[in-house]
Structure formats: structure tokens, C-alpha cells
Amino acid sequence: MGATEKVARWIVDTTYEDIPPDAIRVANESCFDLVGVILAGSTQKVGDIIRSYAGDLGGSEDATILATGERTSVLNAALVNGTMGHALDYDDFGGFGHPTVAIFPALLALGESIGATGRDLMEAYVVGCEVGLAVDYATHYHTQQMHRGFHSTSILGRLAAAAACAKLLKLNEEQTTMALGMAGSMAGGVIHNFGTMTKPLHAGMTCRDGVMAAQLAQRGFTAGDQILEHPVGFTATVIGDEHTDLDAAAEQLGKPFRVQDALMIKKYPSCGGNHAMLDSVFGMMREHGFSHEDVANAEVVQSYASTVMLYEEPESDLKGKFSAKYNMAAALVDGEIGIDSFTDEKIVDADVQDMMERVRIRVQSKFELGGGTVSKGVPIRVTLKDGRVIEHETPRGQILGSQANPWGMDNIAGKFRENVALVLPEDRVDAAVNQWHDVTQVDNVGAAIRDTLVR
Image 1 (cartoon, rainbow, N blue to C red):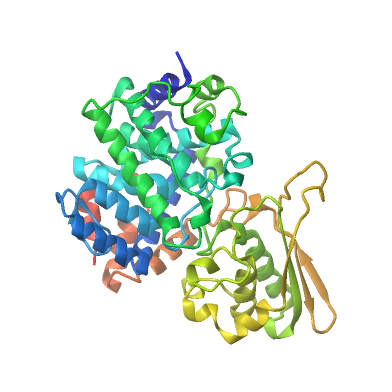
Image 2: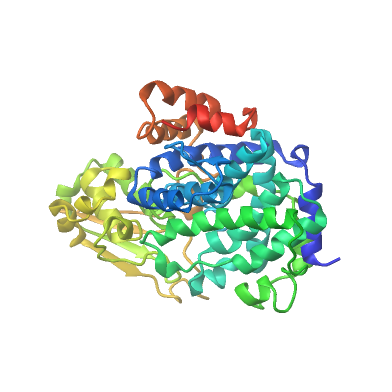
């Protein structure tokens, strides 16, 4: 039995009862959070364009586009909701990029079409997420292909989404193997497109392809049955040859589960590479009581290995999400980072531009820490006009929203309320919170979407 067959068997055999309560809790928080983020993302230009495109495609009316309530095909709904879910870069992250937006919109669309429950979705989500995390862990993805420019959300996310959709459709072992095989050929997405509308499109296409792979496999469509371990399969071709024992990785699926340690809820709607820095600067401002007017200059130390902080002088809102200099300047000027921090008007704000001139980005040498080790934090230094120098470094694994520093359901629900209030009437916000704060208690996914997540 090869690695692919072992993974497929694990997908088929694993049940909700096998999943640890902590994994369910953390997964539920992320899925609940994403539902609100999808609605907020629907207000963006990205959402307008992708909805219009789906409308032109037409097709069956088996699933719902969140926020507007338009009915479309399962594939189109997965594409649109997935894209809107990543439009703000406000969805969770950890493990293989952004796991939840790569999986859950696909399950929402597919689940609606088959009358699934929230518990069905949660079982499938955790199973799919574990597959993605296992491949990421086994292949050391982040030290190989991501640093060459592959976007892990849409590379490993294809496998995870296909696994989750196969589980939701209750495919057998052979069909699940075929779905994984198709997903291996669908993988794609490059980091050059960060800071453009194509970055959220990566998530939408991942969700669409996960549904497609599972549905085709259900109909008897075939693919390679050794997609993980074959010499010209997914792992060797896309990830590279320097990977660990895939058989051992497959055998260790769920031993232990990784979801409860991997996922991080975002407090700020920008690239996760900014979050340690932002936690530090806001903490420093609270502790030392200074504002941007008191700042002479600031320095941010980025890792040599960063491939996502692409723009030092961003000229658009989307590029601003991938600029440490802009995030630092906007944080100092406004004392907060929110959805309104990323508009074309804010990018050219005079105070922000003035502060950006006082922010220096220093890239850490590959050998600064010895042996090419990547820093576990983002050191920052702020020099005030009165001569004080304040320094802080928040470890990456301890940012607010990580499992080491959890945000808590009350705060996650607060973020959800703010996001859905951008779309839903005030009297429906509570209904949305009550319905989705525990996804496992949703009796019928389609009815819950139509009753609470459309205006």
C-alpha cells in the first residue's frame, strides 16, 4: 500500500468521533470567523467582479453566493465565496498558508447542494485540513517551494479541498484516490500575484477545483493512483525530491491531529507577515503613550527568507497589505489597522506618506543568526523625538490569534459582528452570530445560509 492509498483510506475511515474536541473547537472558530470574512469581502471590488463573472456563466441554481443570495452552480458558488473569503486577507492562516479559505467555501457550496449538516461540514473540514497539514509537514514545503514562489494555499490547498469534499460526499477509497490524483494536477498559484486580485482568486479556484475533483471522482473519472509518491507525481514534481518518507507521513495522519495547533485567527486584514510587527507596535504605543507625532524614525527587521513582503512603496490598497513599511506607518498614524486602512485614498494619505519616509526596513542577513536560521520574530525599534529608543520583538508563534495567544470566542464573535454588519441589516446580525458560532449545530447548511447570510 502506497502513501496515496494510505491517505485515501484514512480519509474514508476517519469519523467525527475520532477528532479530538480541541481540534473541533479550533476548527469551528476558524470556520465561524471565515463566514464573517466572506461577507466583508463581498463589499470589495474583487467581490463585485467575481460575482458578475459567475452571473454571466449561468448554470444550475444549486448553491448560494453569500451576502447577495444569488443562486448558482456548486462550482461557481465555491469559486465566488472562496474568492470573497480571501479578498481582504482577513481569513485565518497557519500551516499551509490559509487553510480555511481553501476548504470551507467548497464545503459550504457542496454541503448546501446535498443537504448536509454543520457537523458533516466540520468532519470533512478537519479531515481535509489534516491532509494538507500532513503533506506540508512531511515535505518541509515552506523551506522549499514556497521560497521559490509557490503559494501554499493553492498548492497544498487543492489536495486538502479535494480530500474534504471527498469526505463530505462519502466517496469510497478508490474514488477518494482519484479525487486526490486530479487535485495534484490542478495545483497552481505563484506569489508574484500577491497584492493583486489574483491572490484571492487562488483561494476561489482552489475551492472550485476541490469540488470538481470530488464530483468527477464520484462519477467514475480517473486519475493517477499514486499522486503523492510517484516519481513524476505531485510531490516530486511540485514540491521537489528532498522530502521525508511519505509512507511514514501517511501512516501518522491523525497521530496526533495538527489542526488545534496550526490555525491562527487574524486580528488585522493584511498579510500575516505583518502581524507580529503590528502586535509589537500597538503594545509599545499603549505602554509608552506615544503617537506618530512623537516618532523620529522606526526600523523593522525582516527575515531574509520572506517571500511575501513584496512592496516597499505600495501604490494600491492590495499591495499595501504586503508592505511592512506601509503597515508600520499606518499603524503609527492611526493607532489601529482595520479594513479602512487599505484603500487607495489611505495609501496616499499625507500623514501616512510622511511616516513611511521615517520607516526603515532592514533585511536580516541569511547568516546573521548563524546557519541560515530564520528569526522566530520580527524585531522593531522606534526612536522618539525626545531621544528614547523602544524595542520589541513578538515571536511569530505568539501573535494575537495564535493558539499560544488565543483571541477567544468573544473577540472572534466581535470581529464576526463587525464584518457581517457591513452587509446585513442590523436586526439580522444577531441571527447570523447565533446560527454560525457553533457550526456543528447547524441542522441544514443551505437553509442556514439562506436564512442568515444573505441580505
